[in-house]
Image 1 (cartoon, helix red, strand yellow):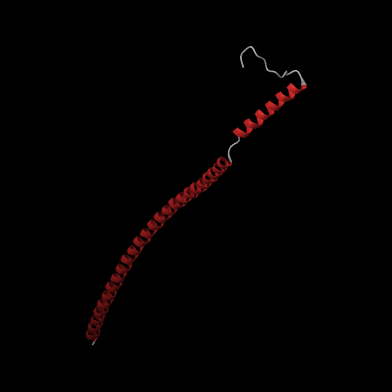
Image 2 (cartoon, helix red, strand yellow):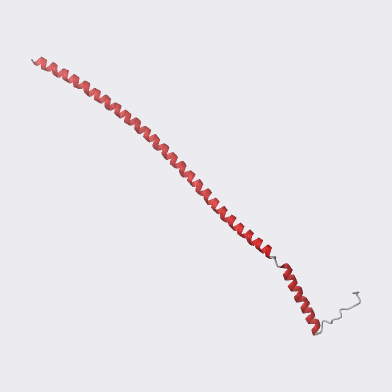
Length: 130
């Protein structure tokens, strides 16, 4: 078409308006159809969203487990400190028991010596009276 020729269908008539509306409608439908995402793209987006959600859940679980592990480590360290303190107390108590047994043995030896001396003194008194 050259610049001097006009479109043969006048737009002022009913047929022209119908032709124009049909062309616009068909253009809109074709545009919507072209812009509509493919089923494969929709499925890929859904799979990506699902994987992202699963990754978020896994990340949350890993974070919770990390926190729990840290808490357990702290509790284990506290219990080891308590165990070491108990072991130290037991060692001190055993040392005190050994010292008490030694004192008791020394006391028994002293009592035995004093009894012997008492017997000797008693024998001397009896001899002196007679």
